[in-house]
Length: 268
Ligand SMILES: Nc1ncnc2c1ncn2[C@@H]1O[C@H](COP(=O)(O)OP(=O)(O)OP(=O)(O)O)[C@@H](O)[C@H]1O
Ligand SMILES: [Mg+2]
Image (cartoon, rainbow, N blue to C red):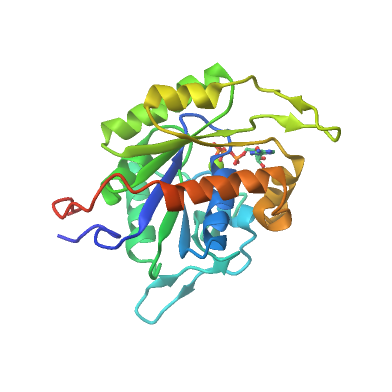
């Protein structure tokens, strides 16, 4: 019987999830991880999207992990964040086609064979949907807090709610909601709500958790993701980076972890 990783440590595990693809989970994970590191925290980022991994590219991690004599994997550090992603182990153009048990094994290795060192935060980029990976993660990381990402339109909200329902089923706590692509601000300051309004707030209210932030639609955010320089690094004073700084501060300094360590929760 082996104890699940981070069981005893004070590491807070944050699973960034949504019921739907393309809402910005990976972008939020990358920028939030760096924003937490910029607060002086020791931060790891785990790309649990083993099929559609994107964190390596988004964070611009050129160096792969190293392996110690004891066969421990040492994650490279990029923008102050220790990163593990399937992107280090599989070529980007090659789809990883795995079944549940193999997935489970890969995630287990990422958590148990990786020398994360002492971490204050482990931010986990979840794949879209509510399938095998979520189940595996909840088994490995029963203390994880779930951050639900949504976009402002009602349709996205209902799928995001599925992620919350999933979290409840596996007994993880939802810590808050982040609304992404909330608005676009033109050069003259005019705000355009391209994807509607209020979805994040409504979802947060329905889940009884805080709306931690609204991240604007910023072309530079996507460009930064494509070249591996997150917007919190390239434009720290900009509106998007400021939104991430606020979300990081609220998580880190204002919201106490809801769940306390439970010694009876172990993986076998
Ligand atoms: N606030 C934003 N402003 C501009 N572009 C954004 C923003 N958020 C995300 N994007 C872009 O939208 C696309 C989808 O974002 P991302 O990959 O982070 O979503 P995801 O939820 O992780 O997707 P998947 O479900 O495929 O894993 C990316 O090209 C990303 O750069
Ligand atoms: Mg993603």
